[in-house]
Structures are given as C-alpha cells and as structure tokens.
Image 1 (tube, helix red, strand yellow):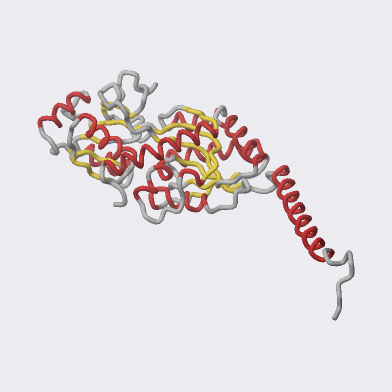
Image 2 (tube, rainbow, N blue to C red; image 1 turned 30 degrees about the horizontal axis):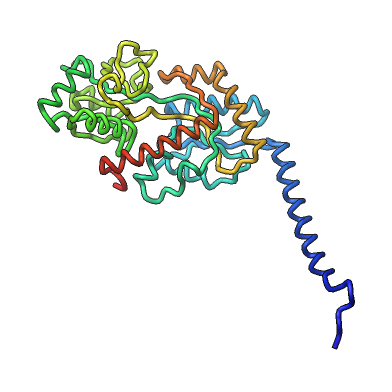
Length: 330
C-alpha cells in the first residue's frame, strides 16, 4: 500500500486553488483594462421606434454628440415594434460593456411590463445614463370645435356621460392613461378610441369625428389645433396661456414621457461614468438642443441617478394606476 509523502498531501489541491485564483485575477484585470480603454470600437444605439419620429430625431442628435466626444462611431439602429418593447428587450439582454446603448421614452419600461405578456425586463434591468427631454401631451381639439376651453369640454362631459369620444396613441399609452386618470379624478366618463400613433388620430380629428384628442405637443407643432390643457406639472413654455391638468383639478396627473439614454444593467463603473459625463455635455450641444426644440419640446436634463429614481417611482405609480383602471394584461 502506497502512502503519501509528508508535505505532498496538500500540494495538488493548493496548486489547483492557486491556478483558479490566478485565472480569476487575470480575467478581472482584463475586464478592468478593457473598461479603462473603452471605447475602442463603434457603439450601437438602439432606438425602439421607427426612423423619422421625434424620438429618432433627438436620439440621432445625441448619438452624433457622443460620437464626437468619444472619437468613435455611434450607429443608430431602429428596432421598432410592440410599442417599443422589442427594442428594450434587445437592450436588456445585451452585454453590459458600453457598446450597446438605447435612446427613447421610459413608457415601454414603466407601463409595458404591466400591459404586455412576454416583456422580459423590469425598471431595474437597465443602467440609466441621463434624461434628455420630456415629451408632453395635451388635450387638443380641431379648429372648428365647439370647445374653446377645458372647462367647456368637462361641462359637456358632465352633461353627457360616456358620449364624448377621444383619440389616443394606443392601449396603455401615456395619452390613454392620462385621460382615464383625469376622468377618474373629476368623475367624468369618456369613450376612448385607440390609434396607431398621432398621425392617423389627427387626420380623424380634422374630419370632426373625434370630440378631442391627446397628441404629443411635438405632433401638432405648427398645426392649427386648439390646445385646451397640458399634462404636466408646469405650463409649457410654448403655451403659457394653457392650463395644466393639475390646475384643472387633477391632483396627481400622469407624468409626461421621460426620454433619455440607457444601457444594459451592469456597466463597469468607469464606462458608466464616462457615458453619464458625455450625456450631460450632449444636452448642452446646440445640435441636440435644436433637435429637441424642433419637436416642440425643451431640454430637461437629469443625472443618471435622478433619472433612475424618477423611473422607478413612475414604474410603481403606473402599476397601481393600470391595475386600478382595470387595464392590466389586456
């Protein structure tokens, strides 16, 4: 029977442990070096909506600024579909190395998980780089409408419960939630009519077939629609005479569309900081400010931490509202 020599018994296990530790240290060192050298190749920015819209226009302007700052191409890829969830699903599952970013509104993050089955992410599935602007929605009517103010509209709704119809951008969208939340607060009842975005809704409004619509201010910029109220905490700088929903008696209104830059959860700290610093500079860029202004909105910058906290709060608020209105999972 062979016996192990003294001093040799622990040699092999110790050697294996040593190699394992060394391998981990080498891997960690490699990741750290990669993060420190980032970016060394082109970056992809996913926009979860079709090309040509306001989100796309602003996203491309931000991508251009990031490209200038980092000296690397930032290629925009439009991954539209399923109300923005397709693009965010792709972003959430990407490698968190700083080479895949996303740009767009938080709505697919804060509302869609409650509304659409198969959404594979939650609000904490992303790193938040910064908020760039807010997409404000409004109650609007066509030029020949009999309603000259929100009070006129609400008086008609009180006298005719469920008879007035309105157009919105789809089930569970911010316009849809905004009106239903307002109706609940003011004890009114309207008949919702969903559309696939603002353009087809506005066309029907101009024909006089809708009592009112809830478009983005960006969609009606330069057009002859009468705006009766805005869904925001403050009056919009381009419409200083138009009241907010809060002024009209809605204590807690649905927030506007928060739009910003995101990354998959788990970015190296150096990369996250570099992106957040670059994003703060991008919103000061004239091209970016002009792109936002051309959509009828204004720059509303928030740091990554502020943007994340605001999105988390909105995620909770939207979940409670959607369940209360009986809209979940339809």
